[in-house]
Amino acid sequence: MHSGPLFVLLAAALWGTTGTAQALGPDGISPLTVGLIRMAGGTLLWLWVWARRLPVAWRTVFGGSGAAAVAAMAASQPLFFAGVDRAGVTIGTIVTIGSGPVLAGALAFALRGERVDRRWVLATALAIVGAVMLLSGGEGAGVDPAGVGFSLGAGVAWAVYLVAAKDLLGHLPPTVFAALVFTGATVLLFPVLAFQSLEWVTTGRGAVLALWLGIGTTAVSYLFFADGLRATPVATAATLTLAEPLTAALLGLIVLDERVGAVATAGAILLMAGLLIVSAGSRPRAPAGG
Image (tube, rainbow, N blue to C red; front, side, top):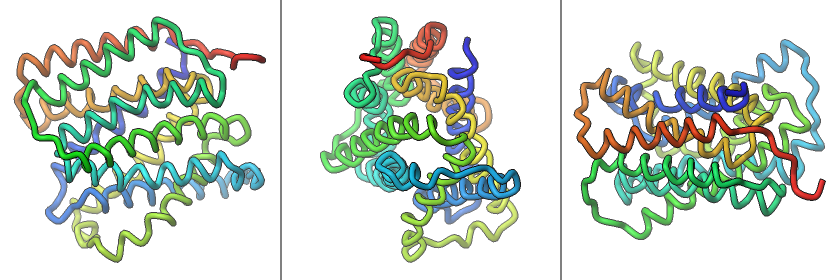
């Protein structure tokens, strides 16, 4: 496996720990405050940027791709959590993770000329079907149209972020890119504090959780992701991020002692197969036309 896809997988594995971390945290945690803490954690990368005196291409940052990356990252948090709240965790998550890779592949082709091959189509189909089976476990659920809409919006936001990030990473070092995006997203999400309480952060367990969410699942993970995305096609990277629900399911089984049925187990196998196929055959592709 090339280093690019490996870094993307490592990032997705770190993202997959957030659910277990929240479950082990103190009372009073809300999804929106978790999202804000994660965004704020990314701003810590500014310390690294300042200490290393890394150059910042401000014209690039405030250009179309920079604004799109910041807005998409900030929008993905409330859209996803609103979708989960309205449609339920299973449906909301399935719509978001199922639409993200397909939308990202379509946007990358339309805007960057990145083509996908049959291997990617097969691998992505296996991974999405596997993720749906893994998350649903074969259980039925009611569908809330508004919740599905919010979740689809989160998938669109993630796809926009991926394409914009790919463009920015051609001009900025991964550390500078991640610091800028998360600082901007934190500013946009700051009004959330007017409606949410962060008292849980003041407890010992809450402080440990906040540090892990901010540093482990954001600052470190998105450095891995940015570095991996530089050498990985957008569509491939989007599919590889489906390792997130797989990690979450494994941690739920091992750490939280959750039960996994036959349908979910089969889904995990399909998901792993899809990830193996897309990572084994991933190589950076030149955009069409040049």
